[in-house]
Length: 393
Image (tube, rainbow, N blue to C red; front, top):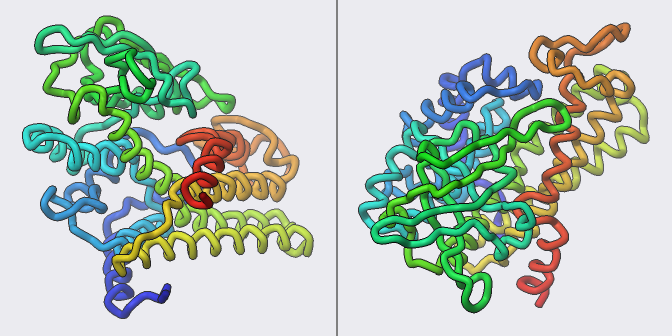
């Protein structure tokens, strides 16, 4: 197994790096490098820049308008954009629902939905989790009843990330109560501007508005928006979740945040503390190990070998690393990291503490936000069971 990059791959990396340097707005990269809050316009602006280049769907094959990159090229693209301070691509459209439409949608659905995703014009949301149906996704209760050429949808989704911006939502809905719970689920595309759709914000501990509740009250959805076959949605959902869990690992963002941690530790005078630097070193070792695992999977895919089904394992390690670097940043900031003042994240103000460093103003928000990473996308406890069954046997 050769984990080193070829001269052609290194050249590709340099081309990506040069393009990102010329096209990534500086005000956006500043926000990303300093963990300042990104607006809808920031995220949409970068998505449209990538879309115009044909790179928002960077993992897509050429037959659907993508660049047709290899797994290694996709990894290099992710790494260079992350290190440059580009926002993480909002995955719901290009990374999650698009592969499902490509694999299971009909030609008309592909022609209708994929161009808006590729251009960054249409914002997609994910309708999976419900009250009482998080990691136990098979227990979803949102009901879709077929009446003629439409479905009538009633129910509720929750923890809908950035759903306040959504134009369309892909939903797991229950179309049958017969047999196993998994066999009665369908995959439905829903226009969020439809009558009967209500989006309510869930305010987070840091005062932010990132997640939502979404209610469906007799929402009419054309039957032509059903992906694949009725009651086969569980199969499509598993296909999508494999993309989500690999995406959650986000090793390239971890590499960028490691450098931010070092900057904060140096500015706060704790980098010279041997015990603290030991913790940074252990984190760095874990990040390198995660990267080697990702490269191992990519190497196997490139060589045509069957790689281990390690999406769950990548999710486990990646999410734990995200929590760890946010904890170390908080420790580096010490008492200055405690105030949770949203104005500080917007204006670089850290309150009235003498010598307060604006760089640590957002640390509490990041720390609290990262508590979710071991829960969403299937909790790590559930993922460990899956890894034990599918990888260890």
